[in-house]
Amino acid sequence: MLAGAGAFLALALAAIALPSVPGDLATRECLLVLATPPVVATLRVINHAGSWRLLFPATLLLLVAFPRARKRWWIWIGLMLAAPAAEGLLKILIGRARPEDPSMGFPSGHATAAAAFFGAVFYLAQSLSPPARTLVRVGAVLAIVLVALARVILRAHWPADTIAGIGLGLAFASAATLLAEPGRSAAEIAGRRR
Image (cartoon, rainbow, N blue to C red; front, side):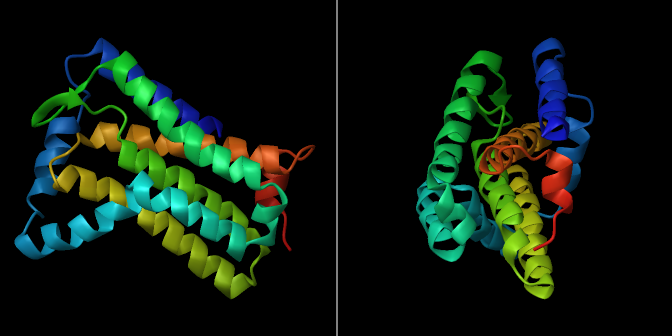
């Protein structure tokens, strides 16, 4: 939780205090080289994995798939409501424009949503058998990274916007995890096997 919150805070301070976040322009230009028509078409599909319209109903599927999620269902529903509310408020407070649009883009809502949802999936996968757990966790991490890349390559965000969104979303997912396991530390939750 502290790593995600720390990454978000550092990038937010840079976005507020500096005319541009160091490395943002160069990283964006490197990623835009990948924007061939097939890549863009693929990323338009992947982009939906960061949409609240898809992820909020998907949260209901978590309640079906994972008994641990059903036990404290309000935490996971709350996660998917609190993360976008915070992201929307932070966009207004920070006021950093998107690269090709004057609307506010820091932090990325898609990256925040993907990190919150797939961060929860990563935690809930703890109850799966080792091979399934590994597969689900790798898929969750890959989904977060691909959504962030999609937002940059589709020209919707600066790289720092998406990294900050990931940090914010993971901080919320970590907080939800700690609430779901009262009395346990983050280290105990991460290391526990079932």
